[in-house]
Length: 260
Image (cartoon, rainbow, N blue to C red):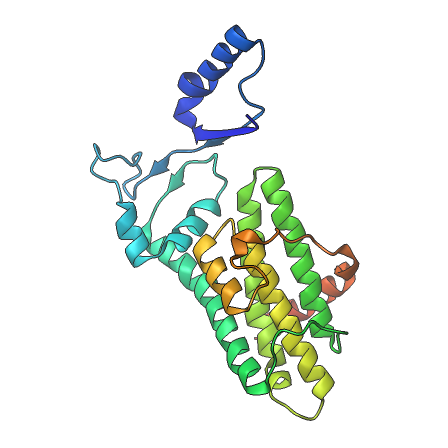
């Protein structure tokens, strides 16, 4: 097979044994790649197990924190390292990333409904903020793909987290008036089309990481397929990546934050 995955304590018992059997019976390796996960430990620092009494029931976590928040929390650290699980830290992940993205969607939906925007694509970017966030979007998609391809899924998670922060705390905050002012209809349309593109593409990029939230977001935005999981994973459009503009905006943000 192409890939197998198990925890590090299966190195001798499972990974090694498969290769031995494959070599003896078929004269070939049993698998091409292996993703070795670290053990999950409880808040007491011991390996999580029912026998130790420090196990956390998945249904309790899913019911209070959410399945997607738990997935993000576990995947944002290199999976081959020992991972300490804390329900409270997982909850912070939900508040920090998923709730922030939900707020961005709510802002977009309320303004799009008022404006009458129904998903038309952008025909041109009227503002540097639009060009910058679309550049960041495509850089993020590229980093997500690279993380998955190299089995370094934590890179994909952190790329998504960084983009959501840029989208929420900088793009939307700096663009608010553009969504409701009538003085420049072309710019108003550009802002709506740009944010719609960002959210829809992000729902596809996040689908392997947060399958439930991503599907809800995709459907809410009127994605072309019945489910995000029936759509293709996005490709980065390198023609829209402007690293110089991304650097310039980073300098502006650092300056504002330093002054604040």
